[in-house]
Length: 156
Length: 166
Image 1 (cartoon, each protein chain N blue to C red):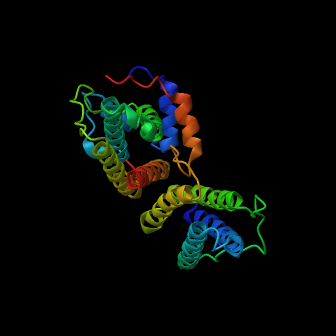
Image 2: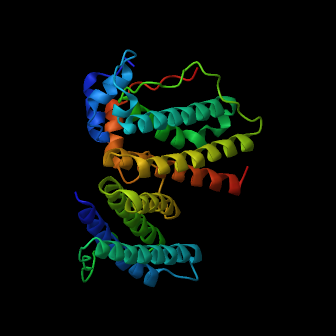
Image 3: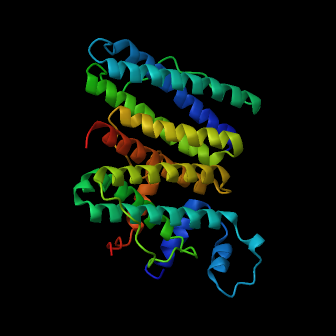
């Protein structure tokens, strides 16, 4: 994948993230779930900023930034607190996958951007109930590590 | 070094995008005649990542051995680093740290020991992050970035545990 393709793919993910966080922000109750409301508002701002950064970068590289779809499907009814969290966690995990792919396809400043975005998405997901994983954004490596794991040496 | 079949090594080389199998083989041979400049810098980056992952795993094991009550807090971190080490080891890189090195010191207090692991994770996150930016191979960069993110998660989780109780 070229750097431009990878960044376009990442931008498409940001369009979806901004849309879904917009929906979640409209549904979360600030009175009943102030912490969740704050996390969703922060995530919305972060992804909106990334969307703008990617549009600038892609334009600089001579590309035409991909446009957003009209709407995006949610994976849960997104009504209860746990559903809102699951939806948000899903966005972070999907974005983490695109950031990791962008790391592989870019160099220099663009790669640094993707590395930091992956780091942030992995940590942000914890706030929505995610658990630490061995390979955030790159679950395929986990499969490989399992297939090839020799018995872990016992502690001396 | 002899436990992994050659197939594993080839798969990892593919994963890491280390096209230079010759470079790796050369680096492994004590009688190598290749000049260092011919060795892929990614080999060194991978070897250093393995050394740091192994050191972190050793620290976690020593911490659990000294404070068995901390095991539930450290299980996730331990399995992440074990997976990292297992994957990196399949590259059969030279210059792995001596396994007979003295075990790391563990603080007498549980809280201090947990703090030490959190600090080690935070440092590991930063070294992997810098290495990911510098790696020549995109696949190796992705692996390093993902391992950095894993340490970021663990560090965040441990800091939260330290902040709430104990």
